[in-house]
Image 1 (cartoon, each protein chain N blue to C red):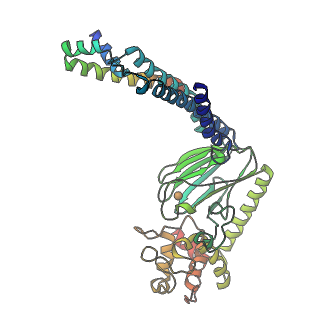
Image 2: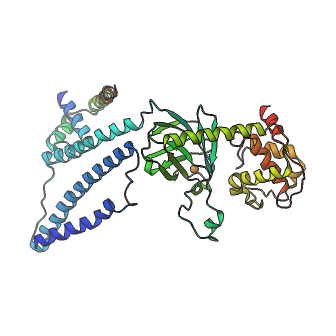
Image 3: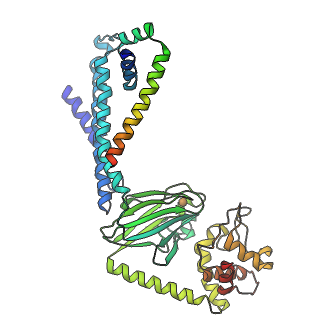
Length: 57
Length: 372
Ligand SMILES: [Cu+2]
């Protein structure tokens, strides 16, 4: 689970280590990346909205 | 050799940049409001950040190209990835963008803060003129380009403010916060005055807000900056900033003129008076499409000289001016022109260029029609 989150974060940032990428492709299941990816995208939107609200308030 | 290269690079860079910074007219103007100065300094800050990035990036690139060239036996590195470097070149631009976004957002918030305005002016874009309405003052007028057509067609010498002059400018007092409410009647226009750092779209059905607080009296010129049709280039913006007492005097004068005009509605007008007034109105409003000699540009803009539909049916003629023709380029002038102007221009069109209807259209008739 932690390794999936780490890979999704790396994808958000745009940089991934080659070794981690290999492991993901050998052991990971696509569906877990999709679910975690969607959840974290929603989290990111909520976070940005929160920061914007705080800044505007 | 290396010092020579550095010198050449530095010289070239300066030669490229200095005209941008020094030459008037090439760079964004500093303007005459506190906000325009803020926007200018923001623009210069970001410009210099971009220059620094450009110098570093291209410097490294050209240095590498030169230093590690093949004729000196350089060999290509063959590694796949380097997480550290990749993180660095992602994080550095991110930090730079955030550093630029902080002052930019502060300025943007300031631009949108229209609270505490002392004067509200409604600015309406129309094909192809601006209309200004001083809310709460009962003053409204259209501002038409006053550059003669002969200058545009090249038959006369172009004067200094070619295409940037109007019959009636927007008059505003200095040191007063003025809120501008921008909208349009037909298509999207954009109201732009560089010295005031205002460039705002005027969109039909929407009201956009902006504000100015001019610090120096003077005349500031701009243009419509949203392609809006045939005469898009012929609807300039002119703002005249006056000292507060001069503005008050102007306001009083305008109000008196409006009252006189309102009184004129009830009386009977002579043919000659209506013709004189009508010629003015026709020249500033109608001539851009129907031509000064009434010949029009068929089929889009029918000729008015010798137009029997118009001459035989005065009711249809007046209705066309007041309500326009839907689905054509003919707009409704019911809110743009007052009853005296509509009566005068109708009379003029019926009796100019060889048209000989001989009848007059009285302002009182128009008032009745407008009330229906
Ligand atoms: Cu326009």
